[in-house]
Length: 309
Ligand SMILES: O=C(O)CCC(=O)C(=O)O
Image (cartoon, rainbow, N blue to C red; front, side):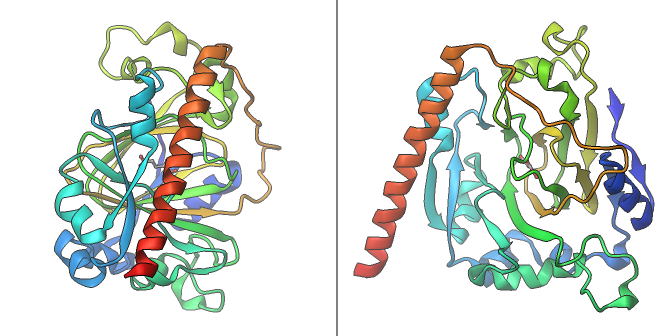
């Protein structure tokens, strides 16, 4: 499979952003923000371990594999509230995932209060608007929408999807290793899509790696692969599908979702639905609605408990 291009300067990364083309840029050690040093399990526990987090648990490690049974889908979509320290101590080993789509360090133009200290450890990635000495910025604070924190162990796998905000995505590997497989938006017809998700069973994508033949359901697609190691910054362009395999024992990623500007080659393809199975759609939508309801009830109960304490 084609590898995602590796670039060696911020200017080259910016050119990929302008073309909506994925790339990987390894941050030179001298420009790595403090998170690379201080985000160990012990360091995080000592500083922000008392903060509550909403973690997810899937016995199979899949978040979520459309081929799994209804109750497994619901279970993997449920969030469980616990202290960050407990998540770090035992949740990771149990196969839980802290998802960057739920744990925000930065949102609505400002740092999220509970995670302010962690934001300070990464904010050097984003140039201050008036700081000319830092050279070319990765993205400016005006362009930045949301910053998510992902933490997981080995064996976690995420569903094929594109980021439904339509934003560009810079995904920084702070610790551990991940393999990311990307498909261009124009492949949507072959990816069994519903909303921003691709609904092929995970085994279909497994055939991209090491099988004698790639699954025929992926015929005509143009996947690319990025093997991320510490210090790698992956640019996932707006509406590019991606799924991720978590390969390190302790994986930490920070995702910066930022505004997509005009793309040099013209408008980005808007994927549509290609999933024709009504049953599949119904199963997934009802699992999602049930999990969202249970998550909402969990949040209410936690809030009442907090008030009663
Ligand atoms: O690491 C993962 O499992 C998913 C990451 C992702 O989807 C993202 O950064 O948008």
